[in-house]
Amino acid sequence: MHSNPAQYDLIAPTTLEAVLDILASEPGHYTPLAGGTEIMVALGAGRLPRKPLVSLQHLDELRFIEVLDSEITIGARTTFTDIRRDAVIATDFPLLNLAASWTGSVANQNRGTIGGNIVNGSPAADSPPALLVYDAVLTLISTRGTRLMPYGDFHLGYKKTALAPDELVHSITLQRDFKDYIPYIRKVGTRNAQAISKVAIAALARMNNGTVEDIRIGAASLRDRPTRLPATESVLQNQALTVETLGPLLEKARAALRRETLPIDDIRSTARYRSAVAGNLLEEFLRTLVAV
Amino acid sequence: MTTITFTVNNESRTIEAPPMKRLLDVLREDLHLTGAKEGCGEGECGSCSVLMNGELVNSCLVSALQAEGAAITTIEGIAVGQKLHPIQQCFLEKGGAQCGICTPGMILATHHLLEKYPQPTLLQIQEGLAGNLCRCTGYTRIFDAVQAAANQPGKP
Image 1 (cartoon, chains in turn brown, cyan):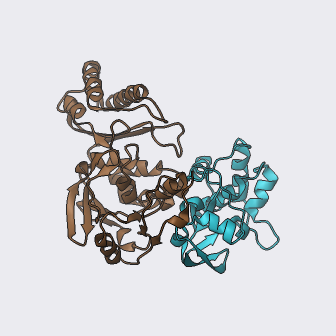
Image 2 (cartoon, one colour):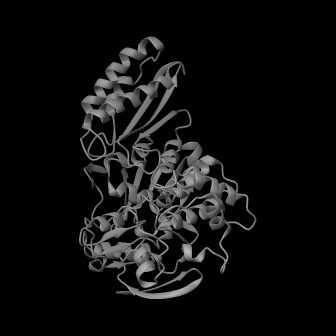
Image 3 (cartoon, chains in turn brown, yellow):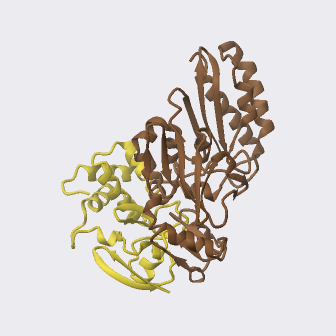
């Protein structure tokens, strides 16, 4: 069932201040609309809540990538195409660059924004696992001011976030601290392009003489929200990784992963498949770390 | 209803439409430009592809008001007068079109691709067209057409 677009109002203010005033005037009354790659699909499918929308299209002040020596900040309205084109993201944050490269198609990447991707809160979204392992920090903004929030605190449940009804995500900040880390990312879907993930893992590890000094594992489609896997990480933390220890460690890590995830059966896959493949991805990652 | 002014194929157009009406429907119903097709209506198939300020977009996912002030190019604006654009000519010659539903989107995606990569590798072609589904050709002839177009003078 298509929705009738005539039943939806949409306004397109030209300044951030005007948008925030509108959101504050009646918190929760308006749905912010950025690139439309999710909301327009919901409209077409007849599942867009019947609320007026406010377009963020003209907010150029939210479309930027600011590079400092120690950190980068990405405006919420930055598109996936912008992210793919950025040389610093490509070198310092390869997991984000790759996640952007397989977020939908070229046409979707030209419209879809990083802010929209995280606010939408899908557990299957491509960029969140990468942002989680990089310990991203969000700047949230409203007429009440700005506040910082670790991205790890943002997702509260299935499509539920900590964003207040009068707030927008302003930007996402990443520390440039990951040059010594070995990156791993893999998305498993029905085809390489376009498909929404059945399961995905993004991970980083810093090795020292064969020992895991620091490991971070982010996952999509394994819980009701994008998530880190802290129990699996702690099994591996400070462990010597050799051809001999890999087998037993892997067994423990797979068990921890099974305990801390709750994959579901849905239109794209089954819980059993997701669980098995997540373990396989973990194994693939750990094998790249042996003898580093 | 909102008054929306934008440029379509180098011509300024003004329409009255609900602001959330899809650009695809504005093009087809209000402007009678039926080259852009609806396939899936959810940004998966690329049949409704148009260029918006030079960027490839799915017109089924753009609201009319978000196209305000934009320069839109549809398949109707690609030919040069009565003469086919070199990309169209290559699709014709290489058998890159069969039923034709995906073809307008394929040609606009090719146009966008060749702006970015004038001499694309096969992988770049495959990625550039990954958002455009074709159920007839098996893609090989489409890739041949794109490669032939890349070698034409006067493109994209």
